[in-house]
Amino acid sequence: MALVEVSHLVKHFVRDGGLFRKGTLVKAVDDVSFTIEEGETFGLVGESGSGKTTTGRCMLRLIEPTSGEVRIRSENVLAFPRRRLRDARRDMQIVFQDPYSSLNPRMRARQIVEEPLIIHRLGDRLARRERVAELFHLVGLDVTHLERYPHQFSGGQRQRIGLARALALNPSFVILDEPVSALDVSVQAQVVNLLTDLQRQLKLTYLFIAHDLRLVEHICGRVAVMYLGKLVEMGAAASLFAAPQHAYTRALLSAIPIPDPDAPRTRIVLDPALVNRDAPLREVAAGHWAAI
Amino acid sequence: MSDPLLSVQNLTTIFDLPAGPAPAVDDVSFEIRTGETLGLVGESGSGKSVTALSIMRLVQPPGRIARGSLRFKGRELLALPESEMRKVRGADIALIFQEPMTALNPVFTVGDQIAETLLVHDRATRRDANAKAVELLDAVRIPDAASRVNDYPHQLSGGMRQRVLIAMAIACRPALVIADEPTTALDVTIQAQILDLLREMKSAFNLSLLLITHDLGVIAETADRVAVMYAGRIVEEGPVRAIFGEPKHPYTRGLLASIPGGVPGQRLRAIEGTVPMLGALPPGCAFNPRCPDRFEPCTSAPPPEFTVGSDHGTRCYLYDTARLKPDNRQSTIANLRSPIDDRKS
Picture 1 (cartoon, rainbow over the protein chains, first blue to last red):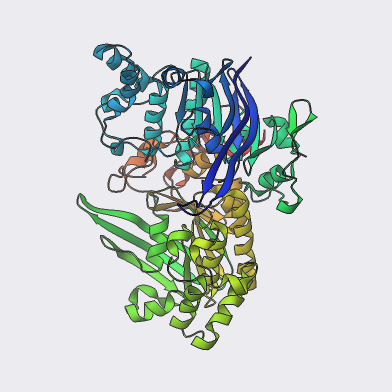
Picture 2: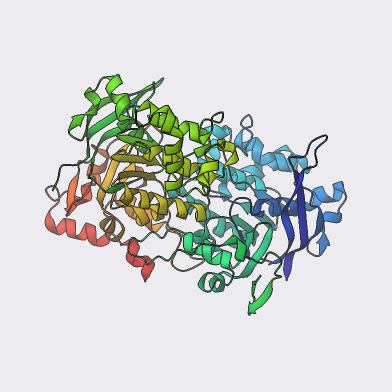
């Protein structure tokens, strides 16, 4: 069953507008639709400016979308009034890319993880303390470090704090916006393993937003490729990586550096003029869609 | 074999922190030969950028070069007076920084900035500097160079800015270009273009390249030889095929094994623990707290370099043939699994 359904999501920004100047309209997210099945990891890939982060933020209404629908368990989040939205957010959380700027430097680790419980008025002091210790344990943090400040933790540990905070309210759906790209190479794999372990343990559904295609191929069941605000290709990771159909996907895959000096390399360069921006997604193979 | 273009010997750069002196670069030695690309791999805090700044003698206090030798074309750079060193920077050795927006001056056109490089080193007159700037922009494949030369940095995309920095770097035909994470801030398709351009410039101008990066994929595509840095020290150095095909140091092996690949959905082979902080290095080999193959000598003293193959060395006691009895050593080595083989199977 689909846990999350995004249909015809649109977000337009006005750029360079001023008091007397008409700005230009940027279609950051331009009619994007996809569904995420319960328990799966759905990858959303694209380069900077493709609209992947904006899509994630619109789904939680951290940015208000221009139009469209985002349904979780068949209920349209975009139609929720404020109070209802706050309740809905217990079930859908986000982990941000940069663990250096996304944690309040003046709060102790315990307070950062506890804050969502206070906002949602869950449990008394003692129950909250217990829950925070449990979450620390869950993400592999040392409970003797509860009273430390973010700067006393390494990047990988900080991302674990962000994850503990996101999991505090027992969500079923978590948006991971480039969760490891700011981390050291030798630490990335630890955090990725933690994410997959937690998914199994807590039956989480992930939207994994990333530009690291090797990682997306490894952990995502299905993948959608975004280019200039639109989805240009979507399908099972195995099928999409083995037989990319859209010119942009091909160019993107051919640009990944391969960590093997003897690997054959053919660089495919995209000619933007040859991309038909208005082509709709059509099914090119079972469950594999491309805008060609 | 011909003399190396640059020979770095026992370079040690110390930062005088409130807690005491901390070696950001600790007894680092390597050579770069003419026309060769040396890839320097390491994580943040490994000392790879401080190594680059040390070669340029641009380390700022509280950092200082404490020991070592930097021989470039037979001259000792550490013995040069500052006025002579200034002539070397840009003209003989050029540096390309990671972040193209902060490396360019926002209030001058890119043409002015390239012209300045040429004028400072007397490679152009005021009259022909602009024309030469256009030529250089053209050489780094910036379309419509004649009008782009009048653009300010903010008018260019990230990839174009990085091309401008490459144009500035090659302006005086240096023998050595140091590129510090030249593609880290860029998207993967732009990164591919910039790497292609660097390769092209290297053969067109017979450059030697010191490429600093944390990305093993970038190293595999560009480097002839590789040096792996960890916590200020070079832990392994060798030809690119040896490093990727037969990595010896447990850190190098761990890095290669942790790259996503193999069976989708399977757990990645992570290196446990975290990178140590500068000034709080563990005794002995700095990698020992994270090392799966740690044994008794590892905590005693930093290992010296052991030869493990042709032109291939590593600082790891596992390869100390004098210390270990042959049969003992065999079993230790046999217990190591090759990450490369595992990924292919």
